[in-house]
Amino acid sequence: MPVNLSIKYVPEHIAEQLRRRATRHHRSLQGELLAILEETLTSEVSFTPEELLAEVRKSGLKTRQESTKFIRQDRNARSRR
Image 1: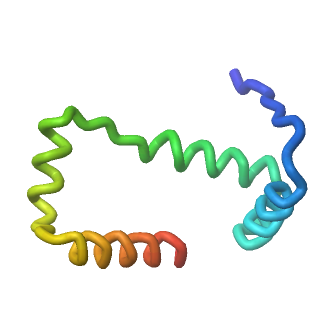
Image 2: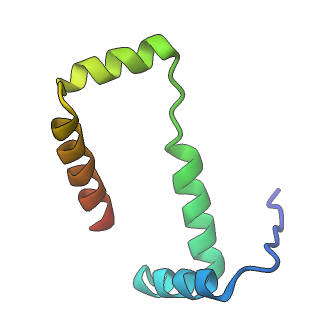
């Protein structure tokens, strides 16, 4: 059964960002909040330290500059969605 949630005392600048995001995605505020929650909770991945190290090694990154470039590319790709 669905549950009603409430967020109180949201700073105006956060509420305005949420309104703009909802408009961009053609959703209501409630629809946008639910989409954010679903996206966040379904994309969580838990790694053991060993698994995390294996993932890092698979990336092939060796230097800070390489990792910085990789992170920038990932952020840019995410911001275009």
